[in-house]
Image (cartoon, rainbow, N blue to C red; front, side, top):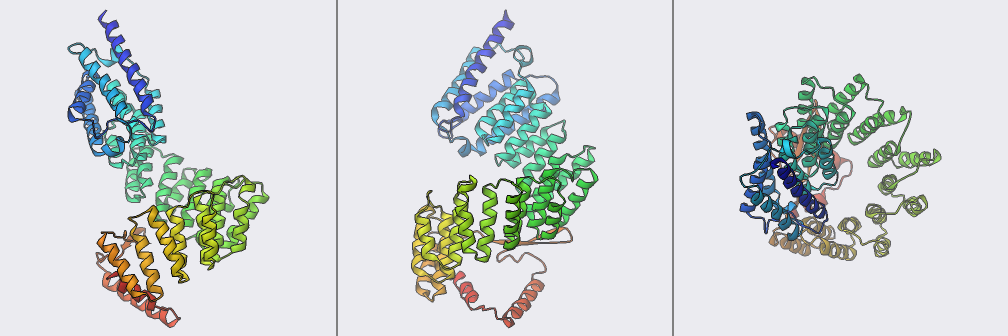
Amino acid sequence: MDFAFNYALHFSFWKKLSFVLLQIKSPHLRFFSSHNYTRKSFDKALRVLDLISPKTSVRTIRHREGHLRLIKDILHSTSEQISSQSRSSSEKVLDVFDELLESTSGFIQPCSESFRIDATVLSSVISSCAFRRNLRVGVQYHCTAIKSGFVANVYAGSSLVSLYSKCKELDNAYRVFLEMHVRNVVSWTAIITGFAQEWQIDVCLELFHSMRNSNLRPNDFTFASILSACSGSGALGQGRSIHCQTIQLGFDSYIHISNALISLYCKCGTIEDAFYIFSILSTKDIVSWNSMIVGYAQHGLALQSIGLFEEMKKQNVKADAITFLGVLSACRHVGRVEEGWLYFNSMIEHGVEPELDHYSCVVDLLGRAGLLEEARDFIAGMSIPPNAVIWGSLLSSCRLHKSVWFGIQAAKSKLLLEPTCAATYLQLANLYASVGCWDHAASTRKLMKDRGLKTSPGYSWIEINNVVYIFRVEDRSNTRMVGILSVLDSLLDHMRTLGYDSKRREEETYLSHC
């Protein structure tokens, strides 16, 4: 009798909670709102988990407590992100918790005896939350995993690692990973992928070596993630090493590995190696063609990029939005206005609807060619509202061609979309400086300073002996900075002998210290 009552109680609870969870998936509802979610309610929810979670060994209890602390930290540290829904759903969930607490005072059976949840289903649901970047619902299913005891399941744990990684909670993803007593290749790949998304190549490689030391064989997805991290951080030497390992383990024939290698070599400047990988592919998919077309465009090799696109059409490969973005980028880098127009107008014929990035390419193409009025009219005739990037592109072209009137219009339009964008003020000040309007340049700088706006410092990097060195603007932390500046001065003198006009640069340097 007691067992039947307890089972019915749990079934009623999870039926109600599931109904609320389905409502929470709506973007217009709120769960755990920072405005109405009190510490008392949070502690009450944790009491529920404490009551209905299975309690077996000391190791299991410690494992469970570690996840409870994790949940607590997540809810407190991400309150703004989780509180993006309405108050009603938060109250409904807490009401269910309250009802369960009142109904189970002094009467709780272990979860494993009264209510069972399939670990595979739970893992799939968490993976679905990860795919949708739905942190608020994912945290709830994390609680469900604790309650059901499946938080120790390797597949549920791997799904949680993926969830927090994709929701930009990398520290919490790593905490979940450390709590896992059993890890498989999916677990390792999930955490490596998380750090790869942030281009933390050193951490990725350290995790990869730890994985190999655990006698686990990495799979093709593991290598694809590491190659992606190498691409983003410019680690060519490390990427070559990973390439060798893919050959040793027989993954070099996988199409997505080859695509990752093409992207790596393109982004790291070895376009010949990228084309070699592309040329030996027995079967090429749209990603292969796009990676090579975009790679050529990034290096200013417009003829090769356009030629590859024409070859792609001959082989009846259907182009997509990224394909046209690569071709338009190639046209704008070398000022091929007519061809750019032709390809843009042909997008509809290929069943591709132009997006903001495509419009931005055309605006930049026209602007670089000095067709500022045409660029402005093109923006006015767009089928979708222009974004700040498009107005910023026009503003840059105005500075290039010293067109103050069009530049002011572009700057005003951009500031309406991004009022606190420091880069817009900086572009406008540099535009004034390029035509000798020093008073306007200084007043724009002063306005920027009065409003407390600062630009994010840019940086460059270079790889030497498999080590990536990063240089930020005005960064003098490098111990060899004196020698570096000496070499730069020598290079600048050599550039001047070749006709480089440094006057404008000196004026901009003066402005940057106003």
